[in-house]
Length: 252
Image (cartoon, rainbow, N blue to C red; front, side, top):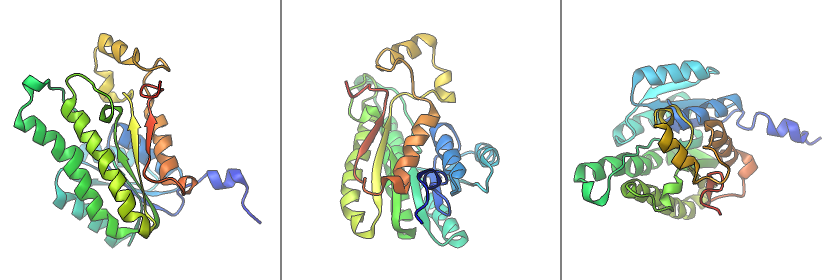
């Protein structure tokens, strides 16, 4: 007898091994929490031991926190090696780590450029390179993009360029990995009401919300739900897409 629809939906990540790079705070934490709730054995990374330990403990359900700098290829390779030793394979990968710093054209420096591309692009490239050999057929990868990758947002040119690079890589990796049965998709949220955003002045928040047709920022849990969908078998025929979770910001 086929399982009931409700039974198939609940526990969509049961018996799957998941890694969330940049999973100790914000959107990454919400994604890690949701994957664990859906039955996955979750590994998450962050740069600060206190954040990593707190996230893993708060998520519970066997979540494992590992300290790693997402811009350091050796750190990411060590994370993957730990998963190899403990689990032997990987089913779901979320490359979420990223930084955003404003700088107008006149304010840009080589250090600003290198800092953003190192974390947002270099870390993502070599994180996937390290993880792919461990991924099984049917595995799924979610790369964290942003509406900034396709919108011209003043003072955020470098950040937007890193996210456009993520989208470009996703298209190519989709073609490269399809023969192995691995899906690659991009998740592109608009401004999301995380702890970091809570520190933004009220007038700036109001200006951001004014650009979103739904009249509010995304909740981290809403972005996590979209990530869960792309990582689960519910999206088994979806690869190479950029899924906007933006309240219509880039759609209308």
